[in-house]
Image 1 (cartoon, one colour):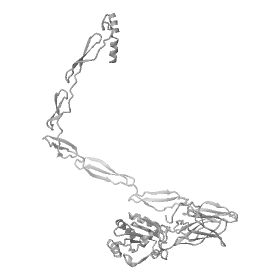
Image 2 (tube, helix red, strand yellow):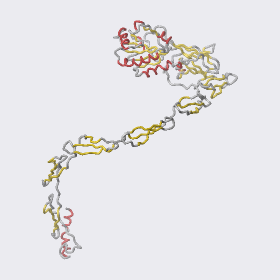
Image 3 (tube, helix red, strand yellow):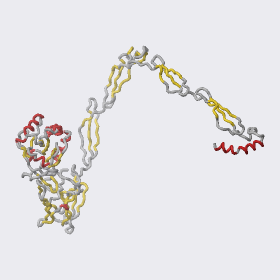
Image 4 (cartoon, one colour):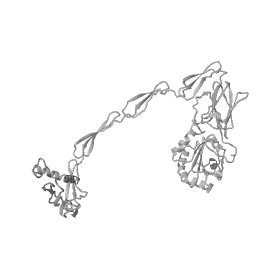
Length: 544
């Protein structure tokens, strides 16, 4: 619009120029162009016919007319006016949204709805099979080829496989007698068994292992070289020569397999003017550290007391003192109830030693408020004849004279998890009852001796069950949830407290295994003269 107004303002000037140049626009086409106004529709376009429009030059009134293209139909989505079937086409009707013109188009036939078919001819390796299908919606049928069937193999020859040679099976078709491809039987491989003349390897020399194939008809043998085992060295050094004030000593690691002395290290000669650092540990007979800051250690030189320990001298289970070089006697007092230890002597040439503690069930009555935890020594207890399912009497001290350990299990007749684990306990008890005793103690005050006895007999449990009328043991262990299982070793020490039910026979067996092993006890028959390179352990409870 702005452009048109601008040109209208220029109209007088343009007309003047035009008058001076032949008097009208378009007379000199090379110099003038028409200035058209807006289009005017003369005839609107329809779906099928063109329309027209015109616009007029504002300078000379000359008109320019052009066609408006036909719009084309704008059909809707249509609707099915006649459904198609597998034998007849259908019809779809669509209507133009502008001119309401109606168009009808064919809808193709639907696929046949074939049934599962009937086998007309069964295929074989010589006959092509055929299948007849019938449409479920019309009488139409079709026949489909199934092709030829597979051959039916019949074995004609067999060569058995050997250890290193494959075998084979030959076949023909039992129907058409045509030869079929052979089937390979893989080589069996040798079935080795130990031969004779084996030489076991040592720490420094190789060994050999002979083997032979035991399959019939095979005489193959094989010899394998076994590498040397290398030395099995403990962490501890053993003093071979004690140092004195006149000569140096030496220490080495002794191979536990062959006894060879390896990594020999000199021990400096003692100097009367140089203090020696004496170190020792408190150990149970099973080699576990006892870390109790209330224990009192007394060191004397035979004539007077040199040192009395305080809790600060115990560092991660190791007591260390710097003393003049001489022999000292070490004694232990104020041990936890049930523990005892014999004095030991430390020499300046071997200032490292272990004090081994022994334990036994305490024969006196437990003080009021006694509470057990891992590492506690139990006070002796008795389950009398009128408390046990089998009518026998059991005491802790008596059982530990015959068995390697005792297991206490706290339960109740109404406890589902307790009953689910009894099967695992019974299985292990059948297997290992010669070495341990299992006492299952009912802690429910609503039960009684008779109900416990009936429960054991009804379920066929052979391990002793008992009813503790006062729940004394349960309260000492602080048991609030059941089932709970307590592991007690041969010295009457609480080693483990399990507050969850056993979930398998293997779990229960693996818990007992360390305490039943002969290697559980490590106390040597006499004080070992062993120089220990202490790697100070972290916090370590007695039986962790």
